[in-house]
Length: 360
Ligand code: PMP
Image (cartoon, rainbow, N blue to C red):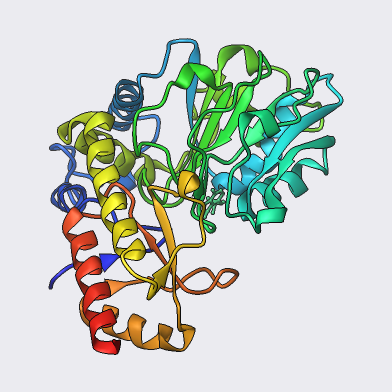
């Protein structure tokens, strides 16, 4: 059966080579006579899988030694609470940059635990832009600055890393992690749900600088305490073993693609092709400011929304699926994470051109 080009925002496509490898190893991992799903997380076989995955992620992202990598559960949504519970410490407030739906969720959760200062709010542009550095109203006494480098729903992406003058920078990288190289040392904490660019759902990765550990509120549940997970190598309780294993296969795959430099080249090319198709005529449009256009999530509209259903139907007949825009935005959204082959974007562009001709 042919695999479809799945433009879902997440769970999203995984590299076919990774799924095939998982399939080969499904019943008997490396002569162990067991599936990875059946292994004790404390056994020597599984420990080797877990350690290899962390080592490869550290290599691929060039994570400095003074950062811990945690393999947690609960999704990025749990991080919305874990971050204030762990990082507010004795500070009064934290700064949050509001660029859309996911920033808003992080903000409303943080407000349950402390004071939130909105350093910038892009409501006036209907969340189609990012603030400039000069527009950020940062509080030098903030416990941390939180932002969403890539808003998955709006398709709005920062084209710079905010300068916070020593205040720890916290980034929700759920939909942009591993899409290109980043300088981890500029961040206090990076987090991401796995189901877009890392692996299967159920795993949440947190990369945290050592000095931010050990400041959790006494009210933080044990499972919401970064220091507990760091001290226990993410095995305080049973981790999402199978998702962690598949993530490890994805990290190996990334190394074979030339690492994040290699990924960045392909991702930029894919995004450029798609935006060029959108910009080629007035038939299609992008709501997002040019400097804030995401490489990973590309929302676009048809000038005549009455044609949306026909566009989606024809796309689906060509194996191009999950292109319907988020219910809050409408139109279309093509998520083109690492595992979306360039041929998938080429096929989408070809369909966009064919559809426009057929209507013209
Ligand atoms: N943040 C961003 C930027 C996201 O895209 C998502 C998921 N779409 C989330 C947070 C929530 O992630 P989860 O479902 O893993 O809780």
